Length: 112
Image (cartoon, rainbow, N blue to C red; front, side, top):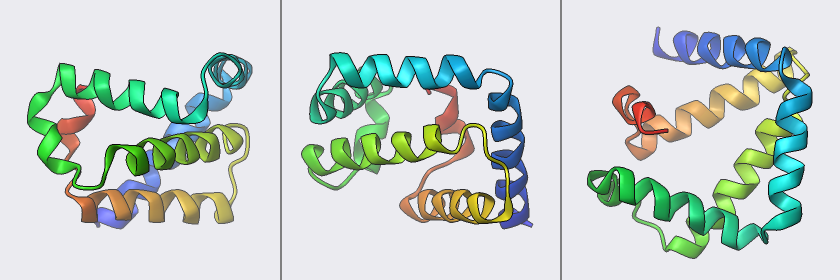
């Protein structure tokens, strides 16, 4: 049931994002134009840990690796913003599964 729920949540998020696809693309492109990849990822984690210091222990990898992975993940999600098909749903489901394996919990999304 968990995987079906994750897939449904990601699909719903993509459908909702489709209504705002231009804003998503433009915002991401603006962020990438104004901030190098590694800096953007570092800013994300600095802000996250300021808002929720208890999450610091969830992230075991070096900050530089986390930062690169964050930017890669966001770029992938933005590239999917106006596409809803089984291949993209499968990739998003695996993204969710990997985050559950890392220890992500629904309560963590409140901070984001």
